[in-house]
Image 1 (cartoon, helix red, strand yellow):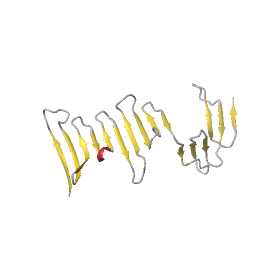
Image 2: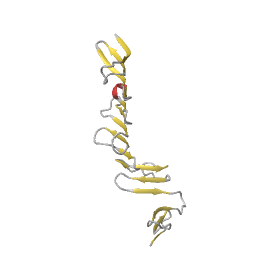
Image 3: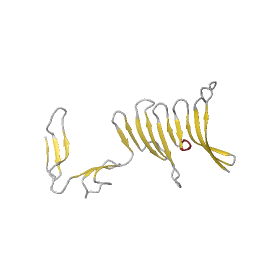
Image 4: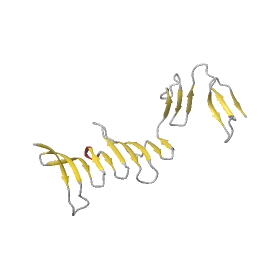
Length: 168
């Protein structure tokens, strides 16, 4: 037989269990917790695959049918500088965006219309191995690179899309 339900636990004597609310799915003699909200406001959903801490921590794990690894998205505001992090499988974060605006990515980055370094579309592509590719429209004389000294409004170095440039 299958049974689904929710339990609200209120005990004045046991603060750790006070205010505990959880839902379950039960099949035969096996009860699986589906969600839990505790007295501190922390919560777990989807059997613990989504967690919301009372300190601003959010963690989402997802294992797709047939996948051997988890995908995790984490928003952490509870310890040190806040960050958004994504992991696929083991080996640490594949990307991390920190509170100070710095970021790290394990793979290539595309901006604009280009993807994967497609030179037929406008944009910028940062290859994970270190290559930087900038594509401007046909006939463009706009800069693809400009270098400045702090405080100066004119570039000391520039390279334009048509191949011309200046080095001072």
